[in-house]
Length: 493
Image (cartoon, rainbow, N blue to C red):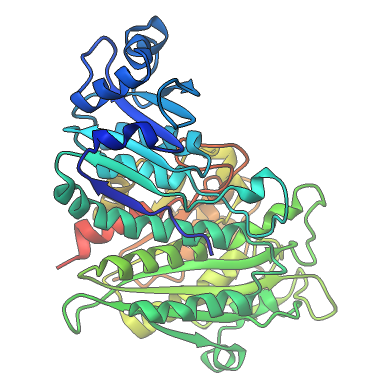
């Protein structure tokens, strides 16, 4: 697994400036006077830093962007990064600045001259997140040599204060990295069994973890979930992770994740082009896993249970056919019109089980559920659907605060008409129109009336084909930070 870079907050050491390796970052505003440590660096670099800050090019930089002074005179560092950042930046600006530094550092040591600036713990988080590199399966070349683990040192006049603020962010970084690693892994590595084993190992952090095997799922009546994986040699599983950090006996928040480790579409086979990306169809389960790790790492004072349904959707002589009827744990029957609409079949049973066993104070499910979500919102925002305004509003607020885009879409009885079946209680698809909404409407049938619920469709945000300010292309870890903040704001005692 990929470990985040070690972050150290320390008092400035001007005597060490000349010998620092890797990259040195200076935080400044256009035309403003440099702080004392930066002025010392400027003298060593023959005035290069001061000239950069006074230049028109630096004035044109947006907040959080940086200018590189490569191979500067007078210091051992290979570059000085001059970052446009005010003394009191917002958290978003600080993270963006850190992201720029993490991208530029490329796995080399980084020293940030922070002085009296605020939000240095957020800058460090941005640098750590953007420095992520999944090189698990690279054996040669420059990219294989890049790691996420190069040290980051932040010089600040208040190191103790910064360390205390960093504690939560360090846990967040671990959770995001865990999610990214899971989503980036190829399906021949991250089988349902391997996934379950990685989650079982989280017991070392204080989580209570149990794995429900196929025999257990059959006894529970999870025919909907089991129908998805019956064409695969990989056994279907449900993993339950409990974090009991809140008041004893208090109802937990339930997080449910779709964990399709590979999705061929089943008998309703997907086109060959792009199918290799379906290793990310367990993204919902990956987010739930990352959140549970982050909560355990920071010792959250809340009761949270994470449940993930792990299956592989493969075509074979035993696979579910279009037209088959399966029975859910709830007891409702489902006509499977399209075997590529399998995620909702998994979540239906996981969600019902979560409510039956834990009677949660609220339930949130996450899934890379529909391609229609990408058509609706692109790759900028996840889609939210809910039966509860306060819970959905709190989640939207948390997502906004963490810079993870989300947007609420409607539900309504009219969409139920599209799910009517002639031979069963419902169909698993409602046609092309409003595809993301009918998928959410389907899931809503497995939510009890007294359970506040939010469905999050992360199809467009779980994995991207281009870099972002806080992540290289590939898995983003979207949702770990938003859900952690939701727990902190709404469910911690």
